[in-house]
Image (cartoon, rainbow, N blue to C red; front, side, top):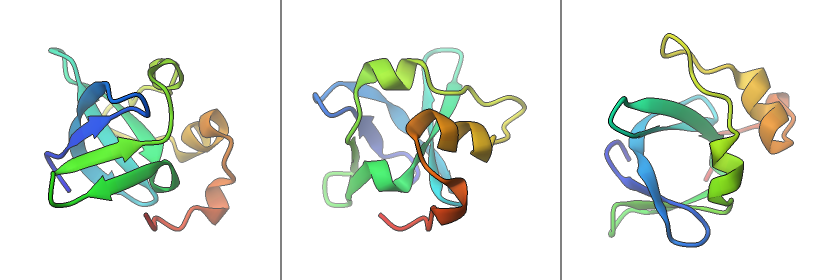
Length: 92
């Protein structure tokens, strides 16, 4: 999935998959290569088209916790998207 385009629920491209870590997809975007993580449960992967379709809006992503020093703060991600981090399985 690394390198796949990432699209919002309205079809807006918001970056590409940097990597998959635990129960989240790490998305990289922008010239400065900012990264944010989104739970697998909020994504649908189209392997043939090499696209990850998200079920959330750009507005929600704009407020997503940013990654610092390339580390995912799973508690912050879970809180932002309204998930219990202990129940995230990583399944898509």
